[in-house]
Amino acid sequence: MQVKFIFVGKKLKLDSFCEVYIKRIKAFCSAEMIYIKPSTLKLEALFIQKKIKPDDFVFILDENGKQLNSYEFANLIETINKPMVFVVGGAFGIDKKYFKDAFFLSLSKLTLPHQIARLIVCESVYRSFTIIKNLPYHKE
Image 1: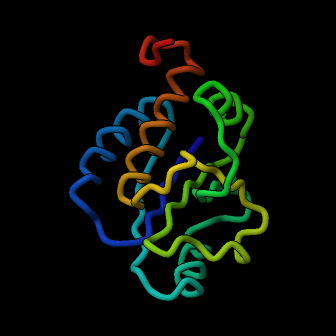
Image 2: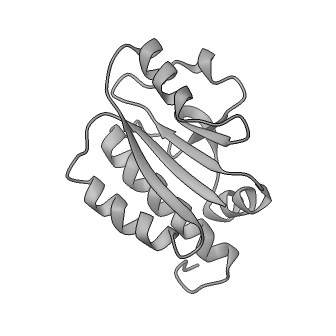
């Protein structure tokens, strides 16, 4: 299995915390972060699509997406038998019309700055793997 995180925008200070979770995720599968240079929404979408393979399961982080708790998210990840890609857009989000087959995921009803959303999604993916493997990271 492979996990890719695609972030629109330059590398930020908070991304060093994302790297900690990427390293932890690598205990379960291969993982990487990819940065897309900010541009128009259309160009960003086209650049993102170049980084996605046809068999990838794509998650687009979107404030209007489906909200899942940690167990629901872990259960979903466990059912996916293909590479996963998590896309965090820039300040203006993602042009949804280019990602009709994607799973739109919301991290919160709150609007989150994209740099914080990056960190939350990396931690949430790591948390999901620990739930799947029944490791003691997640507390109830």
